[in-house]
Structure formats: C-alpha cells, structure tokens
Amino acid sequence: MGTYFKFRREELPFVGDLMLSLFKRDRVKFEEFSPKYNDEFIASVSAQIHKVQDLTTTQSLTGEIKTITSELYQSMDDLVPKLNRLASYVQSANKSLVIKYADFGIREAKKELRLRNVEAYCAKQKVIEQNITKNLEQLKAEGYKEEFGLEIKNDTKAIYEKNLLQENKLRERKEHVTNNAGEFDVLWKMMSDISRKGKVVMAHDKQKSEEYMFTNILKKVRNIAGKKKEVVIDSSTDTEPTKETEEPQMENVES
Image (cartoon, rainbow, N blue to C red; front, side, top):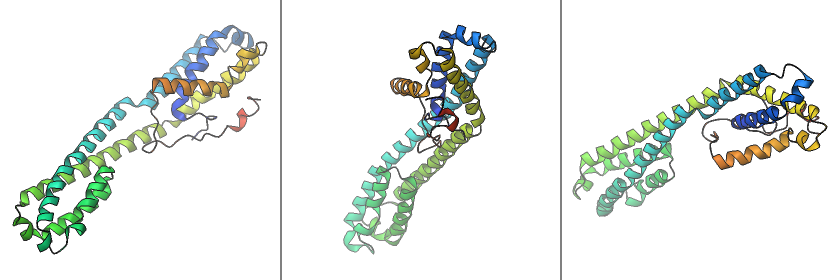
C-alpha cells in the first residue's frame, strides 16, 4: 500500500483535479521547462484521475450495500414488536415457568437488535428458543402458538442471511479497491511530479509556487470533500485507511 503524504486514498481524485487545474493554468511555464508536459501528458493525467475515481466510488457496490443495510435494519426493527408480544406471554406465565422472565433472554435480545449487533442477537435468540421449548406448555396456556415462535425464528434467519450478504459486499468492495492499489500509486506519482515541478517553474511567483505544496492542496481537498459529501470513506466497515504520515521523499519538497 502506498503512502500519499497526509491524504487518504479516496481523496486522490480531488488532489488530481486540483493539481491538474494548476498545471493547466501554468502550462506555458511547464512546457518551457520540458516538452513532455504537452497535450498527451494532460490526457494521461486526466484519464488516470477518472480511473481512480471509478475505483474509489464503486457506486454499484456502494448502492447495493446501502440497500442491504437499510433492509437489514428495518427487519431488526420489525422484530422488536414481536419480541414484545413474546415477552407478554412469558410475563403472563411467569409464576409457572421453569425459568423466570428475567432470565428468559428477551430483554438482552432486544438490546442487541437496537445496537445492530446481528451475531449477538442471534446468539440470544437461540437461548430464547431453548427456553420456549422448556416452557412450551406453560406458554401455550397463555395463548402462545408455536407458529408465532416459528415466525420469529424465520425472521431471525432472514436477518442472519442479510447480515452475511452485507459482510460479503463490504468485503468485495474492499478487495476491489485493494486489488487496484497500483492505479492509486500511478496517480500519486503524477501528482508528486506536478507538485515538484510546479514549485520550480513558478519559483518567480511565490504565491503560485506555494499553491503546488501538498499542505495547501490538503486544505482545499478537505474543504471540497466536506462540501460535496461525495467521498466514500471505508471505516469501519470496509477499506483500510491509507497511512497519513508524510512520504519521505516529499519532506524536502515542502520546505
């Protein structure tokens, strides 16, 4: 995994756009420095920016993950009233139960649902199912039906499967970005080159020269990302953050 000054990997397309705009503004000076900074160079940088942008957003996978997550959370919310109904049966039969309501596991299961902790909820639900089996006749006497218990069991299974699907999609998105890490590195080399050369060719204009410094670009990138809210950041969930320590070869550049 490359290191990109203090930028996160998903911020590189913004870095590219800003750096390319500076280059186009000062293109004459770049061409005076070297003929390689021509139309072909601009086209290659622009193409690399778009390539990395596609890798960063992974819009299709991100959309799927959002949909799955929304459905998962809704299913978890829908289970709470059913557990409340089950709790009512248990409380009504409390005096005749082998295990008392406080130890039945329903409170704990509802807590895990609210915390969106699927694995913990499923574990609690298994305890509830065992306690229902031990106290089935007592619960039936209060109006509980086995079909209702089966409904909760099936809903729990559906939640478990949605959670697995969500995890698979998150892993797929993470692998998609990781497997194409080289493309990020290519763009970063282009940006580093423009940054270094920009400070050299614009040395006669202190203000413009300083605009090529990554410390100044960083402020602009964070501002753009905050306004547009278009950057997909994999926290927790899905992408490992890029190292934010300054790249060794950049130390002299920023001085």
